[in-house]
Image (cartoon, rainbow, N blue to C red):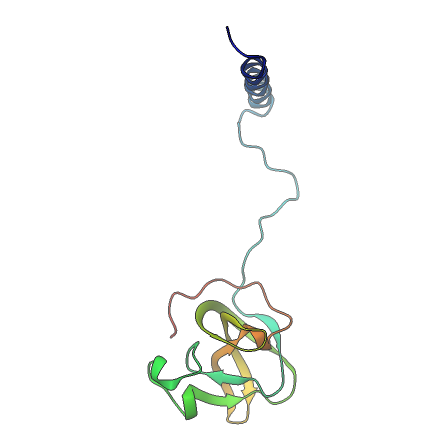
Length: 139
């Protein structure tokens, strides 16, 4: 003899199958898209707010030895001049850094003490973050 829970599950499963069959008959598809609904898309080049004096680095590390093609002291290419909205290209996880500590880094193009530079900043220094895609490399 089946338990009451098993019987209830079978009835619910049957009801779901009938609902899906009815929906399929009405729409001609078992996949329904809501009108006006769009999936969220990550757009490289959206802007993030980067804090003043944030170091722009050649990769997501505070140690030059970790960065390929390191430039400057500890891979620093320059420091952000003033709080600014910067183009943000993608994100990648690297070395833990910042306060609060995080291992997330954003690739940005920013005005720095060494001119306009494209490099990596710790997410801890980016209080307003763009929704951007993942980066497959540090290049």
